[in-house]
Image (tube, rainbow, N blue to C red):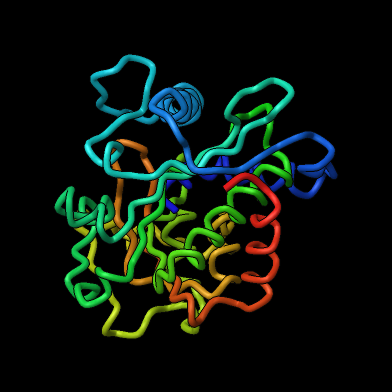
Length: 269
């Protein structure tokens, strides 16, 4: 969730997921939490290449060529490494409930008022800054990222997964507005879990009633059982419309858990 920023990346990832039949066993991938500062820096360089150089995001970082913000030192960094080239080719940032207390907030709070999720904080993990090297956008890499994330949630007995999921606004925001207006009510969170954007997208004005193109990553989370927690926010740094998604693990599609937790048990932890 959150980079998940950029529908261009998401579409490319999913297209490769469909077309590329490579498996982690064939290509030699492994998934693990970063174990050193050097691995974290390598993941942050990958994020910079994808978000800034490829997608044109504006990030403020004191380290040139790296996507680093104030949350990074408090996060765990899930990485997929390709063994033959010995390089990190995929990453996901994870902020645990304990870490969010130490930093003082969740990243999502920079975009949304999440007061109604207050009672979930001790059991809620935030994820974001997900990206894959453009040369490795295969089914193997995205599957391992999701597997590592699902295994992390189950192993630590966390009950809620939260994060911002992005919709590109290269078209001026029309698709993002149409998408929100066309979301099936079954995917909307109950009132007690609704959040409110700090900088709302004027979706009523932008919607033109054309069929919405749903970014595959958002589609995947909804199929897994996630809720959309309210109206979209506008993220000017990434030029995206962001939805806050919440996945209660008790609501997670059992096939999702079985599919993604099992593979993670056979890779590096």
